[in-house]
Length: 87
Image 1 (cartoon, helix red, strand yellow):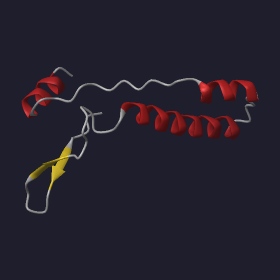
Image 2: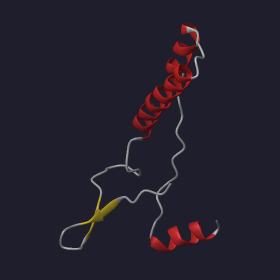
Image 3: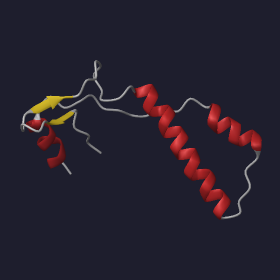
Image 4: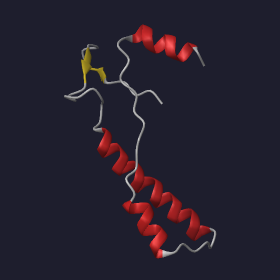
């Protein structure tokens, strides 16, 4: 998924996001949110299918440090087109 690092104003002018880093969101925060969302849906899936999960395994999954792969931003629109063109 490619997420733009900004957007258009009402005056149709491009405005970059307010992020001070190289990414739109802090990578560690993305990992924490992803873990929470994934585990929420995983637990829902298990409940719907009547599949039990041991509390110790559930704790291990929540305690584990999750990693989210985030690529460095593209420099310009041409780089985005070149990247997408490969697929």
